[in-house]
Image (tube, rainbow, N blue to C red; front, side, top):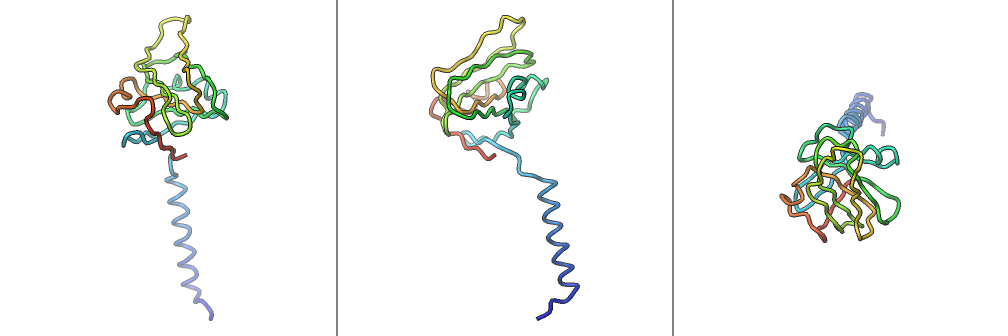
Amino acid sequence: MKIPLFVLGLLIIIILVFIKIDYLNPQLPTAEINGHIFSLFLAKTEQEQAIGLAKFNKINKNQAMLFLFPKADYYSFWMKNMKFPIDIIFINGNRVVDVFKKVPVWPNDNLPVYTTDAKADKVLEINAGLSDKYKIKIGTEVRLEL
């Protein structure tokens, strides 16, 4: 059976429209915690991780930065060049293992370092106070769509 040319053309147009829609609206990475969804900025490389959220003057309450590490270990964070306070959430697998709340912007180069006593393979940074607002604590499940 031969497919009419206009049907084949229509089928090609439909496929191209779906490809364009998917290209223009790619699935953004997200984290869901206690029913709240954060759109994620990903920090995968050492350079991205060294800069972190310091490249922003602020982020929206539904935005966060996720640091991805190759293995679970004891990672340390500081507030170098940060312009706004944050909550730092350490995650191992899909569970929160530690939370540093309302970490302030530091006025000089004598920066405190925030290290957890539990191994983590990911760290999520959100606006200060949101871990209390969304009841994020040790043991809370984190669902990632990357």
